[in-house]
Amino acid sequence: MSIRGVLTTEQPVGFTLQHEFKKREPVKEYPLFPGFEGWRDRGVSERAQGFAFFLAIFTEMAFWWGLLDLESGWTTLETERIVLRGDESLYREFVGYFKEWERLGSHKPEDFRLEFVPKSEERLREAR
Image 1 (tube, rainbow, N blue to C red):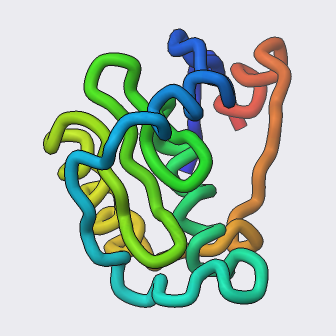
Image 2 (cartoon, rainbow, N blue to C red):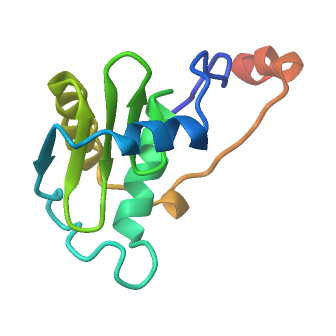
């Protein structure tokens, strides 16, 4: 799978913003995704790491163990639940990414080979 384009986000995200969202009361709580029970018992499970890696590749809204959108809120994996602080559509999007990750094989970070190619060499590689 090739990822092309600028690998930056227009969304100014930082820990300060995360803490602002954490101050809000959770709008809703959901059970953890299947296989995530105890995901933080002894460090972070490979399954959770794989999903977080997938999110980071597929969406600029990825932030730690969930999604953060300046307009619609924040949804994230917590130790024993998924918490939504914001619009329900963000949770549905989070679930959609989880299902896509599972459909693609629930890969862990070590299942990928990352390669960074200077833009000047990109056309040469495509010609091969």
